[in-house]
Length: 130
Image (spheres, helix red, strand yellow):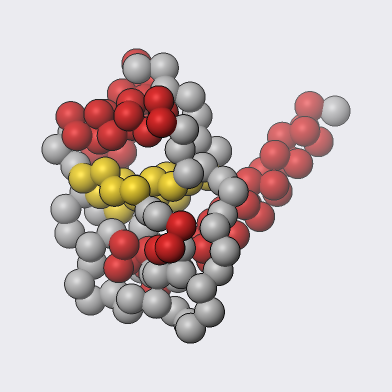
C-alpha cells in the first residue's frame, strides 16, 4: 500500500497546506467524504484486502477534523510532522495511524475511538497541571 493520508472535515486553507505537504513526500492525500464514513479505514486507504463496510447502517456525518496516516514508515511520519511544523499548519486534534486492528473499523468508529482517547488525554493533562 502506498503511503496515504486520509483527511476529513478540514478547512480549505488547512486542507490545501496538508495536501501540499503530503504530496511533497510522494504520498497520497485522500479526502473522506461524508458519504464514506461508513466504509472501513483500510478500504478508504486503498487496501484491496480490506472489507468495504463493517455494517449496513451508515452513520451521520462527523463534526471533527481527522487525519489518518496509512502505510507510513516512522521516518515518513516524522518528516510529515516536521513539514507541518515548518509550514505552521494548525494542529488537527484527531490523528491516527492505520493498524491491523483499526483497518477493519469504519471511519466513523475510528473517529469515535479517537474522540474518547482525546477526551481522556485532555483530562489527564488538566489534572497534572492542577
